[in-house]
Image 1 (tube, rainbow, N blue to C red):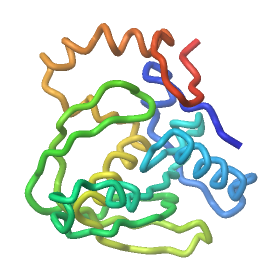
Image 2: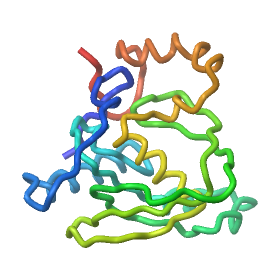
Image 3: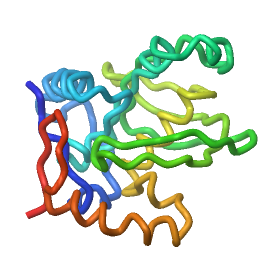
Length: 192
């Protein structure tokens, strides 16, 4: 089932999420719905707060980015062909490497994209969908998508990395999004 994606301005997007255990009700169904929702909205990652759940859960499929790369960008990133993964109870162990810029957007903040600087590499401790524990290092575009989704479970958004003047210039657009004055081709829910 395709779930509505919560829009900028909804308080849950600013919530630090909580860990869950294997007894979390209907987790399999939630994961199935999140994958369906992410693909239906052309996303490459989706975090639980974006579908109105305050839990430390996100999904990533960076292989879609590589499938759609221009010919001149192929072979440019170390993580090609990408990763498809479920992350439960994720916590950053370390983030390393130089910061690099990449144009990011967010399903909860439609029609706004910006070049954001993030570290090249992230090591995460997390559980997969079977609650098997992992400590794994990711780099390149996959690391970026993971860091973007990880921010969601920490109550942060990519616009928080923008310079204050840039954020100020976007205030009108952000206000419109939170009021539901935005046209998207996927299901959204807006702050009450």
